[in-house]
Image 1 (cartoon, rainbow, N blue to C red):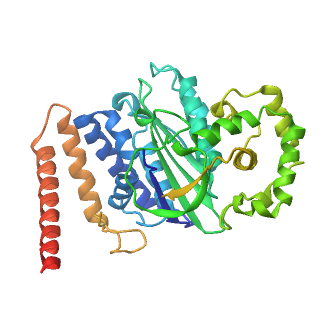
Image 2 (image 1 turned 90 degrees about the vertical axis):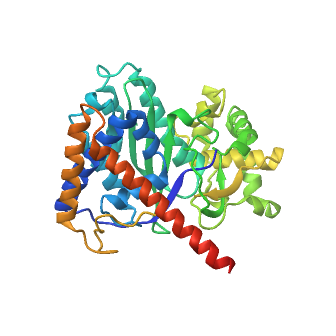
Image 3 (image 1 turned 90 degrees about the horizontal axis):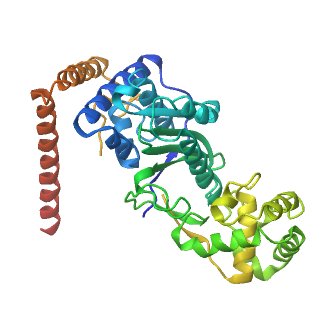
Length: 379
């Protein structure tokens, strides 16, 4: 699997109410049509694709390159389906900041509405956040977490981390049906040619040995682990094992003595594997990095890998690019989709078919343009 990520400039502020209201209404109509045509699981698949998600945000009229697109789109989806969850077989939990911490309660409150075990969904929600926040050591701290699910337990995650030093945010996508192993390439299977620097990524499939050894070392006496860390910090020959300067956690950041209590806890609990280690109390990126450093030095395992990281606005953008939001056009779109969705309740309608024909037309039109460009280049 490839990593499904998007890296965006960190922007403050919020969407004006007049835009947020329209985003909510348009998102609702689009989701109703997707569910009517393809089912609720298709919504999960689409939202787990960072490129579709970005296109969706552009369609809703938000800044195309802003970190705020994640917050506003997920909020618009959650608000848009509010009251329709049972009919759509689609539920949304979480949000930004304090709302993200309410995710478990929001999932559990849906226990009577779903056939899946809500406790299992809570675990998946928490674990996905731990993977992207702790096991993927890319310098981004998760501050937004959204968990979407269906009655039978199908699920997807959209969450975002912040790197204050770089003033950028990174969005992570998960799709439950595509996850074979929660600690090995669990993020959505999305093609992405965006490359970054070298990072320590314990969720990479190539880090399987490092994960195994990190769990093994966590079972060692804390005195032994601290002693090995002191050696690493004092030995100049091990300088290659420090993280690049742009990342939060480096060998210099690790204080062996302060980690002693955590190592004592893991020693007493004896985690049987990396998944158990990752969910252990107090185990964060510094602890995992410390264990990984020792594994690299003692066993030569490598856990550092390359970081994997067209829609024009249909209605304009909040920041005025490519043009200010056309409110009349926006409202017409909402009204058209709403009427099509209502008619779709009794079967496939001419308007829905017309939208599909329009989509095919633009796809063919775009392909023809690309073909002409290729011909021109060859000339």
